[in-house]
Image (tube, rainbow, N blue to C red; front, side, top):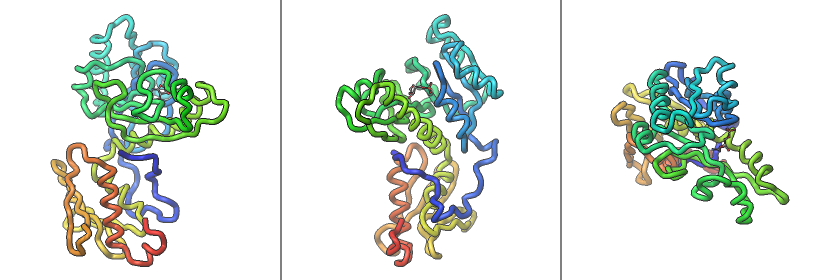
Length: 300
Ligand code: GRF
C-alpha cells in the first residue's frame, strides 16, 4: 500500500533522467463516475498527470459536476439511474467507456453500489475515494461516526473497488486532525481538502506502468541516476548499480541487491505486486550500494 508520502522528488535531490510526463497517447484513459457536486472529479481533471479524463458519467442527469465537465469540453454521459434501473444504467456506462476506450474507472462521489457483473467486467481497474481511514467507517455518515467515537484523527482512503462495499485493497490514505468543536461538516470540509490532493496522486500512481513506477521510486533516492544497459533501464548511485529492470511487457522484473555483497534478487512486477514491499526493497538496495558519505548524511 502506498502511504501519504509525497512521491515527487525533493528539491534537494532533483530527478535526473526521469523525463517528462508520458505523451498524451501513453496516458491512461480514465472515466470518472459522479452523482453530485464533483469536486474530486474537478481535482482529478485539474491535476491529471500520466492519465487523462476522457469521460465523466453520472447517474443523476442534473449533477453539478456534469455541467463543469461539459463546459471544459470533456465528454459527459448524463444518465438517470432512477428511470433506467441498475442493469440498463450500468450497460450505458459500460457502452460509454467502450466508446471512449476507457482503461480505468474512478468513482468520485458515485452514490450507487456497482453490481458484481460490472465489477467483474472491470476487475482491478476501478478505484474509489472514501472519506474515512478504511477499514474504519465503511458506508455513509463517516464523519459523524468518527466524532461519536471520539477519534483524534480522521482522513480519507483511495481503494480498489470489489464487490464488498468500501472493502477493496487500500492504495493510499491521508490523515487530518480532528479539532476541538468539530462538527461533521467542519470535519468533512477538512477531509475533502485532503481528498483533493490524495486522489489525483494515487490515480497517477495507479496508472503508471511498472517501469514508470520503478523510475519514480528509484530516481527520488539521493544521487540516483538512470542509464541504459543492453537496452534496459538501470539505476545507480555514485557509479554502483542498485536496480535493474527487465521491462518485458509480459513479465516485467526488477533486480535489486540483497544483503549478500554479490547477491541480487529478482522481483516479478506482473500482476498486482505489493508496491510498498517493492519500494522498500529498492530503497534497501540503494543503501547497500550508496557510499558512506551519503549514508552518513542521513541516507534515503
Ligand atoms: C467525497 O467526500 C468522497 O470521499 C465521497 O463522496 C464525496 C464526494 O464529493 N465518496 P464530491 O462530489 O467529489 O465533491
